[in-house]
Image (cartoon, rainbow, N blue to C red; front, top):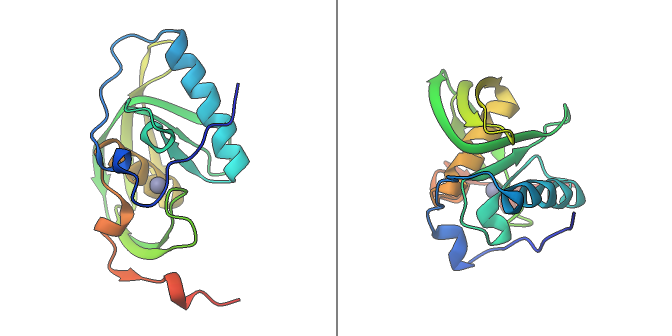
Length: 154
Ligand SMILES: [Zn+2]
């Protein structure tokens, strides 16, 4: 277990498309563990593997209800919309308003290789969408309606 360095700002790796995980080996399990440590250390709600420099389709999310590990996640259903402020561990000190679905269902594999589906609403739906975007080299700033970086009040 280790805390990895979070890639930030204009790091090119954040713009690359991550590869599907074909085999869940020790490297992937270590990756999941390190991502969890890194997420908690940074006090974020989600982290995607490319954010620590690994171009694999692996995501961890925790909105305060325990860690959710997603291997090869795909959003298979979305409904409604929510418009709210969003930030990213790779873009520290910045924020913006982004429109996301109100509810999504994500399909992924767990660390045992079992496929499962999980639904999320509100913040969890937002986190799933944000992290899956990272796997495709997409940042929230690509989608934001308004940059709120300088309007944050004390
Ligand atoms: Zn992010």
